[in-house]
Length: 156
Image (tube, rainbow, N blue to C red; front, side, top):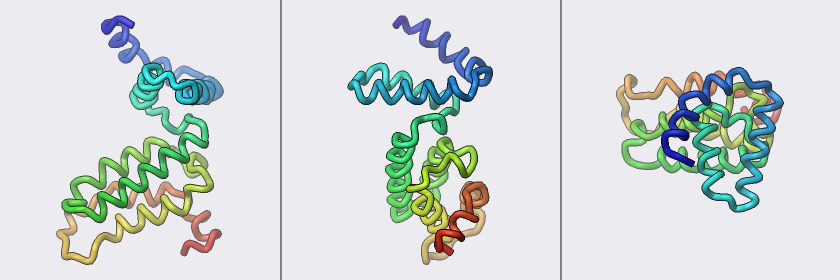
């Protein structure tokens, strides 16, 4: 595909995405998975870029979301345990939240892991920290997660 055409599509994509029906968005999420299954790497990469550009990661199929959220949560825990964690955690948390617009977007099998990961990052390490460095993103993320589900599952 011509580079100029790709740029034009990227410019129009968010507007078209906002006009699309919910069913069409989920259908595109399923189509994206077929690129992965059929090993169509170029098409998959373009599809991933499209979903990122349109803020549509929550429309990916559940198994793909579950896998990607699992990997993202592991990365976030690695950042938390690393040096300068307060610099790296917020961007990874925002990446995770691109998959979650409401609590129903969280695959059931990932709920406990995500809640635990975000709480650990919010609570912080056992080292002195200037409160201004504590990322606000974790508080808003925890508020948007389904804490009622966490309570019912015996997490708290």
